[in-house]
Image (cartoon, rainbow over all chains, first blue to last red; front, side):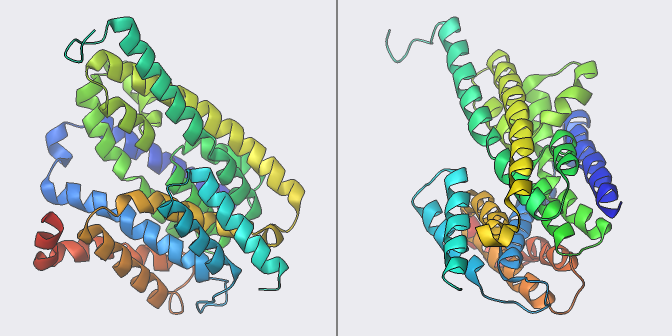
Length: 103
Length: 234
């Protein structure tokens, strides 16, 4: 039930955000500080999510395991300009390989 | 034909449709990664599909799923997803002047206002092609994204324990792939590093789902440091 509530809130919120942009007068949101902040927010959130998802195992303290190797491989794939799905596949494969080897 | 001559209309239309279909189908396939991630993080197949149908903005969907899997409550989980979706309002601002959609169409068009449709529409030379680019990208991406979400979720359910297959690494890899093209200037990199430090520092101290929201403070903090901003503009 909790999951469905979160889904409903996210769906309604994300839709309203899209609709607001498309319907409000441009001047209302187009202030330099607002624009810069909204452009930087995804950077902060995505960086935090990347780090947390790599080291959080639910124990409360950061843990390094096979996921870190997978993420490093994904980073390398990105530097080599690999397409999105390949980047994800590399991370998954390296992590699975690390676990199979006992990492 | 010389480079200075404008392309005849049918060719221009065809080029726009081709580009839009390319983006829509290629990115739409990533719904597979979302379906797998959602199912391996404990969501049911219907829950994964409803997210793709109704939320339809990738980063927010991944963020919500991982926050829920981490044991976060529904409110902080949804808040993180909403923060990530805020940029769509900015795309909407650009698109409303570019596409000039009729009032009755706006509630429908709004659902397709995302990174990829905006990128394709904004790259077109005039309103007619921008409308075509937006509609074709939106339709093809929406179809592919939802279809591959279903396939991914069904596939992951059949696999069993996701960790054995390394599927728990899909989430962070997705976020890194979304982040990488945004790290263009020093201020973006400073925000990213600041956010990682804040998130890791908050992890042992705060309940699940909250450290991400704390890390969001890196964005306004970076704007408060004037030296950094000059550097970023240079």
